Length: 235
Ligand SMILES: CC(C)(COP(=O)(O)OP(=O)(O)OC[C@H]1O[C@@H](n2cnc3c(N)ncnc32)[C@H](O)[C@@H]1OP(=O)(O)O)[C@@H](O)C(=O)NCCC(=O)NCCS
Image (cartoon, rainbow, N blue to C red):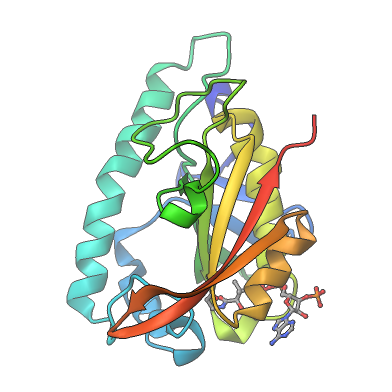
């Protein structure tokens, strides 16, 4: 087992790394797979999901899904190869991304069902950076006196909403990878105005509500407000 993947586990059949959720042991996070397109389309064409997301196109076609998977899979593979190359390095590398993001339910017969996505990235929206003295962030600098500001995006299949899955997924990624392996110390997150479930997920993880900004984003031709919440690691 490559220590640079710690605390991920490895699927003995496929060799794929995965992270098991802390409170839902039947749910795991894995890298993307090129055959995820049909499931991506089913979830991202559901209004209960896309209404609250600003970036995916609607309708979300097979072409969109294939383009997206071919866009994210090669860098994901490259990142895993870099961790593999560093396997003999005795100190755990601090890295800029999380190698697992796609949420999957593992059924009793071992089959896996795609449920959603969670990704952590450097914050870029002006309101996320507001008050920090930063105007943009092109790469993490990890200055302990002026921590990088990270953000999160996520969505889950409506069939599985309200079961505590995203709260658990975000807590697991934060505690198991983002804090120890990416050096995340500070976050600023955005939810579209009225997204009470998403705000509640953030608050359950200790995020503090900062403000609601009216008409902040143009989402598919309509101005929408945003809720902004902040989080800092308590040392
Ligand atoms: C937001 C989302 C990720 C939450 O995932 P989830 O697994 O259902 O979330 P959890 O079950 O962990 O927690 C949801 C919390 O919000 C609460 N909640 C959900 N809908 C709510 C509503 N309309 N009003 C008030 N609270 C609500 C739930 O009661 C729960 O809180 P509790 O544990 O205190 O009862 C999911 O609903 C989703 O994918 N939505 C569409 C896409 C999206 O909004 N993504 C986030 C973009 S910022």
